[in-house]
Amino acid sequence: MFDYTYLPEMNLIPYLAEMMVKIVFIFSMNMGVFAPLLGWVERKQSALMQDRIGANRADIFGFTVFGLLHTLTDAIKLLTKEDFIPRGADRTLHYLAPFIAVVPALVAFAVIPFGGQYELWGHKANLVIADLDVGMLYIFAVASVGTYGAVIAGWASNNNWSLLGGIRVGAQMLSYEVAMGLTLVGIFMVYGTLRMTEIGAAQENFFHWGIFLQPVGFFLFIACALAENKRTPFDIPEAESELIAGYFTEYSGLKFAMFWMAEFLEMVTISAVLVALFFGGWQIPFVSHQMLADFFGFLGPNLAQVVTMLIHVGVFWAKVCLWIFILMLIRWTLPRFRYDQVMKLGWKIILPLALINIAVTGAVILLVR
Amino acid sequence: MAGQYKKVNRGVTLTLWERLYIPEVLRGIMITAGHFFPNLISTAKAYITGKPEQRKIMTIYYPEELPTIPEAYRGRPVLVRGADGKEKCVACGLCEVACPPKCISLTGGMRDDGTRYPTTYTLNGAVCIFCGLCEEACPEEAIVMSHDYQNLCEYDRSLMVYDKEALLIPQEKLTRRLDYIRRRMYSKCNY
Image (cartoon, rainbow over all chains, first blue to last red; front, side, top):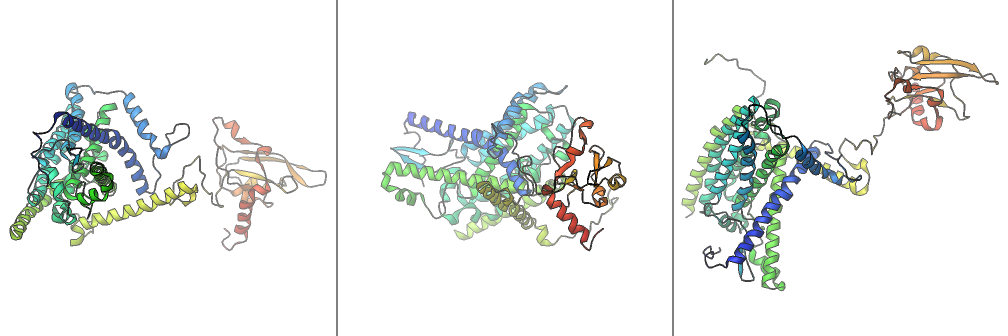
């Protein structure tokens, strides 16, 4: 376990440099890699799951690059499209809503550790942008701000479908916010902290991963997380067959793209939270930090730490990609729940199960001590 | 109003295992993943080896890759040019009679050696319904439905009227269809 009291005695310049590198890395990872690429992954994966080939027509001089250029054409199309605001819409809120939707999806990543702590040339690098002691609570808070984006979008569009979508978002998020918080209480009890880096460090032992200590909490959390993401098993706010596109029916161009991006970034964030809480974060099973550092010891202490860091960051993102794949698999496998089924699942099944899980976890912890 | 609803029995009773939902979700995911991974592997294999037929996916990249046409497929009707370079057609006019939409019209003539041949043969592709009755009526295997299905549409209907030169195709190019016709004719399920 690392000592977290090092911050005041630290040098400002390396601290700021480390901060900038981490922020740029996470931002470019989210906006540069995942936001454009997930559209392609979604198309191709759903195609292969349904025995189709998928998007492959966009080409430059005959090179289609497996349909990757479709993301480029999407970007060009959305940038050059008319930015339509319906008559009678609240112009300010209509402008504001996509930003409120996309910013929380981006900033929620601040507390998720994508690597451990490494001592590089005398500077202690902690691979998390903001090592908050409230950790997971910050993600809950920010994620619920994202809900406002959708609700405001539904209300400001002056459209019946949008309003219905916005109301459904409000109802669904409210229901699942409660359950989601309670599903993770078990994890907080087991690890005794809300700080994401400490939870990650506590999972160094493979059998102390969240999935083994909190299997019920894991399934409940993934259900809630899917509901928070507003994707298919829980996509009643957008429900194409009922509400056209729900709360973003009246959005076009770049503002539509921002809702689209928010959805994908939320998926990345959910995957990252799942990895950080239940799947050992940056840890490799049966290979501890010290073992890796010793293995690359021939490079010298600093370079060994650098290699270890790179491996850990790579492992973290590989796990995140795996979870994105599984979330996509779920999205393209399950049909949509009915509205009453969503509410029933949230209030009558997940909430009681989460409460029972908390009680059982508490009892087990008492017995073990 | 309490009690004033009609209970619809859908004939579905779920077992406890099914109502647990998560096992059934996992089963569904296994099915879709069972499609995803073989498709991914076979598509990658087809891409590396350059053999599109190795793909397990049914759909094809149409203009670049062409589907294998089954031999019973009825494409554009064509006249067969025999091995000696002359039309096989003897201008009997049976196809003209058999044609339901009356798209065939021909006039017969006689060669110097006494064999008959069509002096003109016109098939209106805009009217043809690709039924294949001309092929069945023909006693000489002179008109067959080819496997030609591309570029049959035109913006001008007058361009879709095929004359004798446009219809004549050498015998060698139609062997697959001709073999099929003979097999069908002498098979037990000749209809």
